[in-house]
Length: 79
Image (cartoon, rainbow, N blue to C red):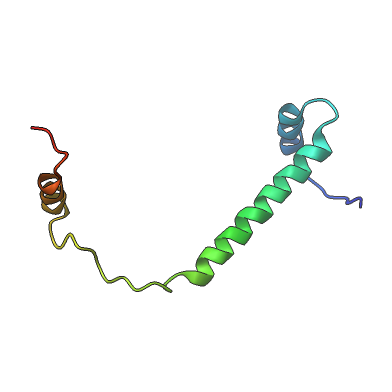
């Protein structure tokens, strides 16, 4: 399907520079596909936001101390 759109001259120049000779349509098509996929992903992430309770973690108030304790408890630790 053909589509007529109006773009600013500097945008068309940038597209032509990026797409190379005779690559404008493919470049625009791929850019639109990527934009639509990003929008779909963003909408999906927004739809599930908050669906997992934030119960905190095992690390408590001092995550650095928790990491040190985990490392000390690791039998593979050297030194």
